[in-house]
Length: 269
Image 1: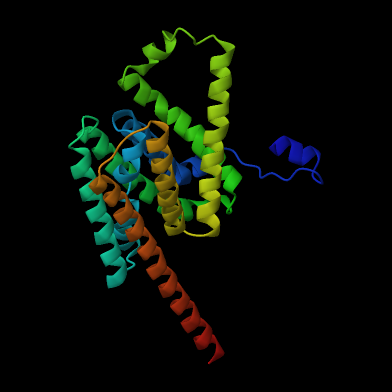
Image 2 (image 1 turned 90 degrees about the vertical axis):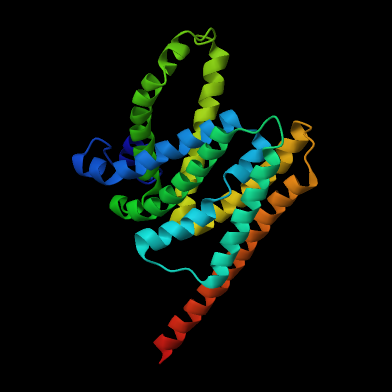
């Protein structure tokens, strides 16, 4: 795409960058490590827990976002917003308690879910920071992230003994297998690109909240698809997490509007 933009500048516009540049590597690799951790913990969470419980298991993203915003950026959160986070934690606790009563409960899967929430919060914050090092170019950052994470996953595969599993896979040479893998790769790249774009034009918080809404829809679809029957309290935990996230969104929206009005009034004075 970069070569096409140079050859046909009036038709194609694409940034030029080199992932093997030392300065670029130094500035982007911390984000790529978080990107790799986010993908790995998400996959491991889904390996051990059901798709329906995945929403509750990964519901602490907003809570971690508040804690990390204060810890890394020194930005305090209002009492109302903190109370919303308490509501989210309560929903998470009820969900884990109800899931523990079922045969599908997995403690290690729940732990990976919490780690996934933590890594997603860190990734969102660092994405906003790292974009300035690539001139706010979403394509470049997505490109760098995919190159670096592809390399970072190799030692992880070796440590876990997965290389041999890949080599011994009976359908490794089948065209349909690579067709499915290609579709999955395109979808994965698209998700990464849209995630970075959303964080660029909005904020890490907006991305986390929209991700929570997506996970809620995912839970409803999963329970219907797999014809799972859940208890009233199990569904209550999902509703509590969703309400906590919605209230948090509303509180932050009001606070941001108030800050904007104060800035406008100060400029008029």
